[in-house]
Length: 157
Image (cartoon, rainbow, N blue to C red; front, side):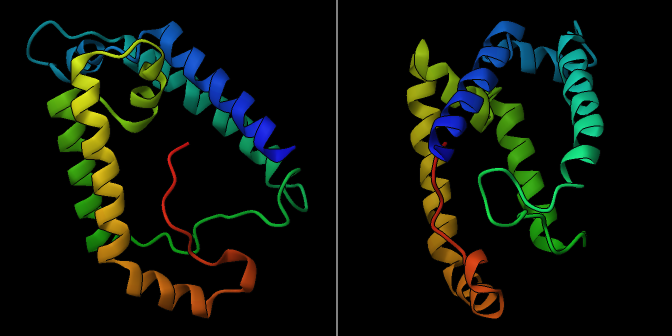
C-alpha cells in the first residue's frame, strides 16, 4: 500500500513540475541568469513549495509516526560540514550547467530529449559512486543506529 501512495505522490509531483514548466532546463537556466533576461517563474514555484511545506510540516511532525512507516526519518545532524558544502556545490554546479536536477529529470522521462539521456546515466553513476566510495561510513553509521534506520543503497524514485 505504501508503494501505491509513493507512486501517486510521485505522479502528482511530476505533474506539478510539468505544469509549472520546471522540467524545461531553459526555465532553470533563465532563473539563474540574473544578469540577463531573468525568468522569475521558478521563484514563484519555490515560494509555493516552501509555503506548503512550512504549513504542513508543523502538522505532520505532531503525529506519532508517518502513516506508512514505523518512524520519521529526520536528519540527526544539522551541522554545516565539509561533505554538506561539497555536495551542495556539486549539486548547484550540475544544476547550473545542465538546468536539470533529479526530480525534473525523472519527470521528463514522459517526454525525453537527448540531453536527458546524457544527464540520467551521469546522475545514476554519481549515486552509485557515492554509495561505493562512502559505504564504509554508511555502515559505521548504520551499526550505531537502531535496526530500522540502517543505510540502504541509493534508489531512484
